[in-house]
Image (cartoon, rainbow, N blue to C red; front, side, top):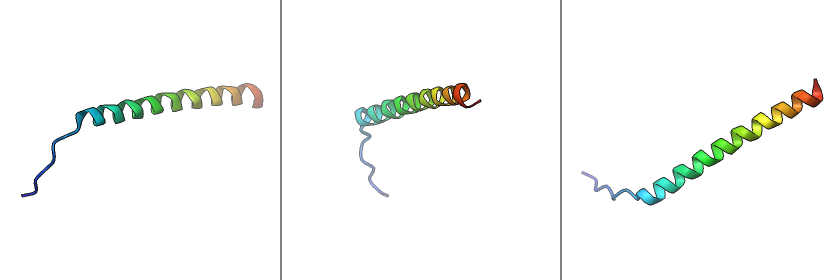
Length: 42
């Protein structure tokens, strides 16, 4: 059997928080962009 290394929970937590933050701000940015496009292009 393969020997699995121990999990680096601190790094996992940091990566997850970065992913959630980028997803949140990306979604907010898209909503603002769509609202501005609706206001100025329609």
